[in-house]
Image (cartoon, rainbow, N blue to C red):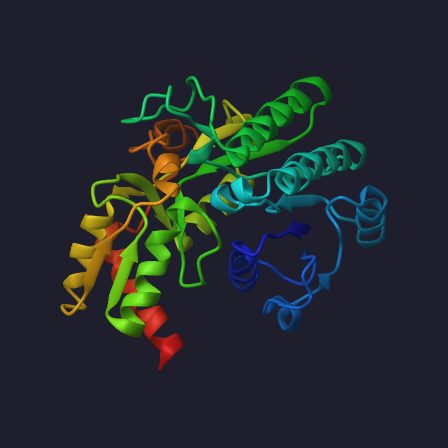
Length: 308
């Protein structure tokens, strides 16, 4: 297996490796200045997602059979550099899909709540509905979904895709609109304060990292015959910044949160408020284990360990 990882998902690769995998899995990341723990836990390769020949060499040399492609510029970062987002998020997808077709790989590409737009029903947002996102990140994810489905129908490619909500982990925030739900823990546990860039009533779907990893793994090992589609919504909870702050206050009573919405508010206002993942629950028995209270206690414990 080859895993292409953005900075945001680097910890995801490490955790999947430690929980499920062995040395038959190869991790790839283009940024050797900030190497993940994978460097000491398993095989690690430097590669460029835009270098198709280089990727071919890796697949052939290491006899890759799964490819999990996380490389992407996230929503807020992508809006700051649209040309780079087009190269990484779209040209990169073209490379991995063609690679998977040529070498008959099982291919996973994550999608996002950002693949929907203001014309989409927001509460709940079903698996199949109008999308029309308004960020380059969302546009690139719809492109990946449709291209992957096309290659599945046209060439028989085993393409699989999950639309994730905001994913919450103890790693530093990576530039996504939902990352306030990560940054709040770091700021509050260091300083007792947090300034939120979204309105207090902005409801968005979320998922704790351990549920995210389990969803990915269970989906990837589900027999193809059980899958009625190639793209599924998955989620665990929906909450607002105000609700999250109130839950954190149960454990950190001194918390002080202020609100100063910025350009990310417009992005959040175009996204789903509640995600309908009933298709995943019916087709391959997806279920979440972490609600907001269990997620908050896990995050506080994990981040306190980092700072102590």
